[in-house]
Image 1 (cartoon, protein in one colour):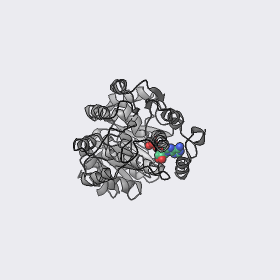
Image 2 (tube, helix red, strand yellow; image 1 turned 60 degrees about the vertical axis):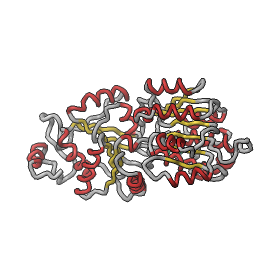
Image 3 (cartoon, rainbow, N blue to C red; image 1 turned 180 degrees about the horizontal axis):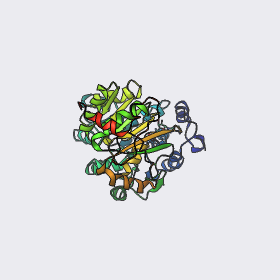
Image 4 (cartoon, rainbow, N blue to C red; image 1 turned 45 degrees about the vertical axis):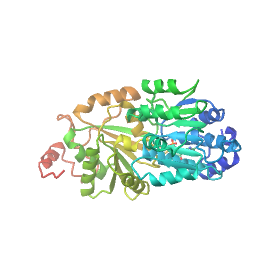
Length: 411
Ligand code: AMP
């Protein structure tokens, strides 16, 4: 199937061609016709499947085709609500790209940054607004956003939205939009809470399931390292020195953990950046930009900060800490191995995380291969290490490494 078969109009087809897209992805094939038909939809699809274009392209087309409607002017006609600032910025960028050859204007608003420039943008008038919930409600309270003319309302990453405690905000925003709007809900996973929300805000929705939650990315080779918690940093350094090359995204569960690992990597001569919710918006943007431009090749992040971010050609993901929600594992490793690139996922499992790995494996229905040929095995009876590389300092096995540990550690 081609984009032309999806009955998209010329300005949009031209922008899509310039973006380098040859054919629609599966989620686009299924979603675009339904959105053009003005149906409500609930789509289960992860980042990386092309889901942003799946809603952005038909929304642009609908707005473009109905420009003579009386609502034309400084009225916001499509609203996309996203849980994180990074994701909101990314979605808005996509809208800008796809609308190059239309006269439709889009903008993004999010918290953690000065509200004044956002007020100016809104005052100028836009057709499409991408927003995080808190800032949107703030601006609405100040009468600076009018949602009375919304024709299409998109709720992106609904599961994360609920995990982040935005349920009441989302419901409030939905009620501020007209009753006859079209609503599109996208969620990487479909827990009961999301189903409940969908039932309350969608009208007779069509369901689209592109990537079942449990299916781990096909192009990703996965490896599991059992390692004592105290040795995770050493294992990470060992793998960075010997195995893992290219652009690497490392997940840690806490902001503190991100900062700690970041310091260690810098002190060991690595170029790394970090992304978490305690950093200012500017710092987060700069970190991401440096990583995307290959100024640094390692990005350490918490799940919330990294969720939904599109980074092309990521070579590897390291699950430094295992997630306690198994679906999160699927999201994380889905960040690599995109668009036919082969990716690699390395997961570190300490004794207290064994139950996590069990539920992850149940969810993905795969036994992740265990790599026990490393210097810091969890099981003391594990066989000694014979490192592959000639002259490697790990050749002598685990015992010699253990004695090294007694040396001064500064982290
Ligand atoms: P998303 O799932 O929306 O985050 O998109 C993931 C990546 O796929 C983005 O870099 C998009 O630019 C890209 N993409 C979206 N649609 C297509 C397509 N039809 N062909 C090739 N790449 C695409």
